[in-house]
Length: 94
Image (cartoon, rainbow, N blue to C red; front, side, top):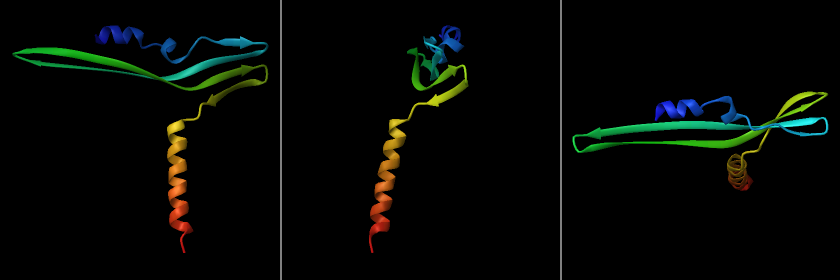
């Protein structure tokens, strides 16, 4: 199992196929994580594993240069809004 996961742990798992329009090329970028485990005793055993991928941004290549455009994290934005609301309520009281 570890061997098969290792074969798939490559740059292609993180960077998507380039997409070109005019003089602009965009390369999708993802965060990829692998995990596996196993165990057993005298009655038997088992193994399991998984993989997860989350889009994090894109590389934008133009004649003017290259830049990384980070995608916003909706969970992080939601947490920031809740914290801001709570702080506003707490400090808004007199």
